[in-house]
Amino acid sequence: MAIDLTPEQRKIGQENFQRAVGQLGLTRRDFMKGLLAAGAAVPIGAAAYYGYSLDKLAGKPVKAGLIGAGDEGGVLVGEHNPKYLEFVAYCDIRPSNQKRIFEDEKARNPNSLRRGFKFHYGSDCAKRIKFYEDYRKLLEDPDIEAVVIALPLHLHAPVAIDAMKAGKHVLCEKLMAWNIEQCKDMIRVAAETDRVLSIGHQRHYSMLYAHAVEVLRAGVLGDIKHIRALWHRNNTWPQLDKNGKEIPGSIRDSWRPEIKEEDRKALEGRIRQLGYKSIEELVRWRLYRRTGGGLMAELGSHQLDACSIFLTALARKNYPGAGEDFKLMPLAVSGVGGKYFYKDDREVEDHVFVTFEFPGPNYYADETMSQVKDKDDIVVVTYSSINTNQFEPYGECLMGTRASMVVEMEQNVMLYPERGGRSMAVTVSTSGGQPALDSAGSGPAAVQAQDIGQAALRGPVSRGYREEMEHFAYCVRMWDQGASRSDRPRPRCHGQVAMADAIIALTANQAMKKQQRIAFRKEWFDPASPEVPDPDMKPEYITA
Image (cartoon, rainbow, N blue to C red; front, side, top):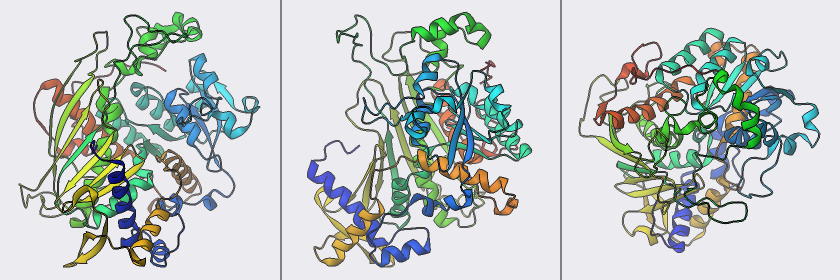
């Protein structure tokens, strides 16, 4: 993203964004607008912004069980707030994960989000947190109100459905499910059992993205015709042994983690019983078609979710009656991908390059989207994920007729005007009723606007994990306190929203597989319709 920016240009871009946030008084809630207008240099809390509060829990955090204590399970435990969600049980079949989930990994890796149960609950918490090897036994525990599912992709739907049928509310990691039929099954069961179903696309709870959306909605960028998104990595370096020496013929690959000897000994005799072909398939599930969804499911879904959030926000301005479940549907996708680098047994691509065509804000005549108004109002979204070069950090670059906005690694946002470009500091003015970027002044108003913008974004930037779990707990408590259906809050990434993300990602897989442009159909996005984009994807059911 914006690979040739100097440190000075990066600083200018970040300050431009902060100034825009402050000067526009950006917020969705009136009382927060008042704070900004008054120049109050206070950070805006996510709970207030997203409309939830600890008060509703009345000092009773939702008691939860963790199903899956590996990499992503560790992140969720590390980022959760025990005042909202209290883990009282956990489940994992691998002995190494059963130990790891208790440990704080930040001591040896300052960037790690995995803090472990001990960090939150004390060094003796293993005496109080129950362990279940079989998730079905965990679901029988009457003390557990909700479960957090962080399992391999192929297990999301069967375990989430079992949990809801057992009366538990569900927060499940993304991608929602292995295929779209399973997504629709999850939505149906959530409705039948009257349970909260939330899916972990955490950008829906990122304050950084929330402010980027508000700048976008204000019209500062002008007319957007292209978004460039990417997530690149370099896995070509050789593996090192315990002495720091290269292991001949080995290549570093985060999707091919070491198989711990304790896991091999404990599980190898049970692999077939557990439904796997080998312990390699169990541990390295991302590499295989029947257990994972490849780069589009694991990485691309994040970027396309962000792009969809941006474009849906723009469309909402023109289609105010679209309803709260509205999520802008792409028109078509095409792409290429393959196993271009690795010469091993993996079945998924190591490089993907896809192009989506989205409708612009004036493409449809109205919110029914039944008639096309301007067929040429198209936004092209490109996405790439590669494994042989990480020169650019991951993120999204939105290119408009008046300015460009770069969202980088979920940590920074930079804003640049078209005239003057990367070295110009700007303020926001109103021209013809539309916000516009002007050369920045150095007077009190500009300084105050930047201070307010910095206040709105102050502190360590949260990637949204903590907020999604807090809001999930809030929704659970409100449902269980007997709120009427019309008054019940829903997760921002509930089943229908998450299914759309899954459709976008998995249809891209279909386009690469078939080497053709695929047009999206409305029936795919309807939970009640049996139509799906991937009818040939039939799961080989694997137990947990």
